[in-house]
Image (cartoon, rainbow, N blue to C red; front, side, top):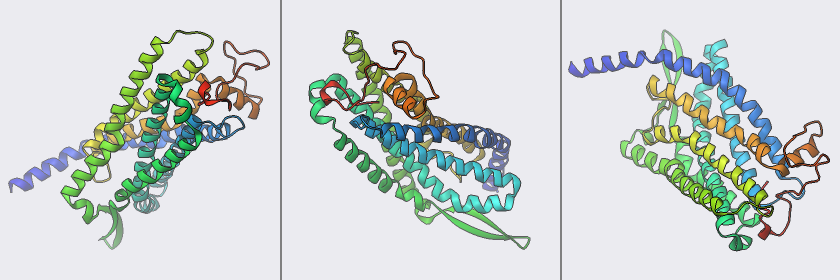
Length: 345
């Protein structure tokens, strides 16, 4: 009787947060997701086009192109979630069918894209650390072929280690008042508490914890090294690109931190309570912002990126200090000897 009473109290307490969850889902899924994902996808496509233009095929740009692909996958995944929510509001039955069939795959893709983006960001930070702190060794270490190989390895490894998430849920059917109701439940594999605990901790340590530690340390080292470098014409452009990478890394750290905290405890997925799922809506929105914002960062900090973009779209003009009227300034990221730090956009 005591257990039954406790369970009832827990259910009543959970119901108190149902409105919070539904409001969070409406704000994030119905309003913010399309407003962020559509411009973000356009920005990532433009980024890929620019980074694959002539004289832009450098090692850092290879990492950034791979990152743009991963971010695009995340944004497409979130747009599908938006479509499912629209179905829920217009045709609840169709929305439920779509949710039950799509969510297990969407959950898998979400984890893949997050893992890949995390380690590609680490790769970019590591390369920038080498370029700033060990410029002589950078010529042999930071090559485009090596960057492409590392990016491919990251994709393969992260897909492999994330594969158990593809087996997390299975569909169930129940009959209620002669109506078949579809739902999801955790599979037997994930019902094993030891597997759930150890795998979740291991993957989140790989996906978030260790990534955050590495990025914070590398960022601190890069910033410290920049402070020691005397500003002059020779290194001003390189420092601008390094600053751009620092901003990319800092935005990533800020956006992934709430997700990292929640993921350590496995909070906020389909089987979670309304409070956790409501908070998860906002933490996932931060990840969506991170996946959509890099194009803007490149435009703000990289004159080369802006110049190449204007070549594609002449009607888009960027007026920034230090650029000549005809745009004939020295570019950063063109295919010059790698010792000259031609490694980025």
